[in-house]
Each structure stands twice: as C-alpha cells, then as structure tokens.
Amino acid sequence: MISVQTEDFDVEAEYAALRHRASDAGAIVLFTGLVRELYDTESDDLEGSDKTERLFLEHYPGMTEKQVESISQQALKRWPLLGVRIIHRIGELYPGDKIVLVATASRHRQAAFESADFIMDFLKSRAPFWKKQTSLSESRWIESRRSDTDALKRWQE
Image 1 (tube, one colour):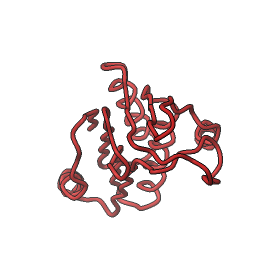
Image 2 (cartoon, one colour; image 1 turned 60 degrees about the horizontal axis):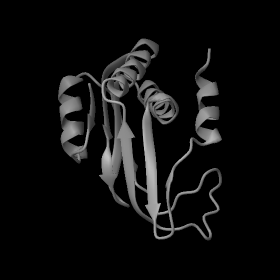
Image 3 (cartoon, one colour; image 1 turned 90 degrees about the horizontal axis):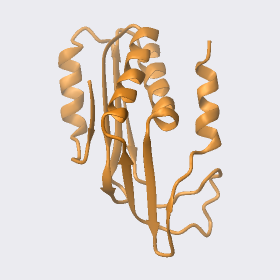
Image 4 (spheres, one colour; image 1 turned 180 degrees about the vertical axis):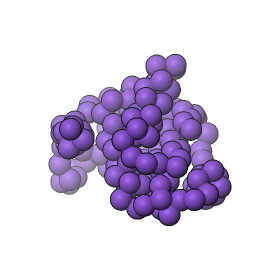
C-alpha cells in the first residue's frame, strides 16, 4: 500500500495497521525519514551550511504513484514479504517533519530489513520527487547525491 500525500502520518497507527494486515509476521521494520536542519550535497561536513527554513517537495501526480508502486512490487517479488507500507509526503515541510515512511513485514528479520533498505534506495534515486530547500541565504533545488545512485549497485543481480 502506497500513499503520496501532504498530510502528516502517525507512525504508531501505521505500525499497528501493518501488524494487523501481516498477522503472521516475525519482523516489522519501519524507517522514517525526517527533514534535516542542515543539508549538504556529498559530505557529512556541514560546517558553514545554512540552516534549512523549509523544504518543498514536488512530484508528478500519477507518474510518481506508479513508480512508487513499482518499487513496492519489486520488493514483494524479491523478498517473502507479508506487507509493505510506503508513505511519501509532498508540499511544504519544516525541519523535524516526517517526509517518508517505509514499513515492511516478513516472517524473518533479514527480509524485512533488506527490503526496507531496498525500497528507500530506490525511492531516493528513482521516484520522481523534487526537493527545494530554502535557507536564510538562498533557495535551491537539491540535486541527487552520487552516494544515493551508487547505493543502487548493491541490488543488481
């Protein structure tokens, strides 16, 4: 199940719903992505970075949902999952806000961990979302990080 939405989401309610749907799960993995206060393009050296005032996420309606669903289906084919839940927010967000939820359920933890990681790697690199960061000094579109694209290589068979 996927959602692309402006509204915030309740992590505990999403967990409970997935646990109910995947009642025979031995593992549920949840990842929640948050708006960071500081952004940088490739390194973790954020000295001198501007603080983020807001982040605006755009998407291409219809195309985005289709691609996110495709990513979910790829994970379901690759691992023995009992359930998948993906929520990606769009619109104006602020530091600390939740952007994305990826939740996977399986009978075994390795499948749940790996599939959630797989989904996030593909969301970051293949889903048509665009982020515009506004700080005190500028407003700019955030470019894809090489490390995000490189992360996809480990999933190639």
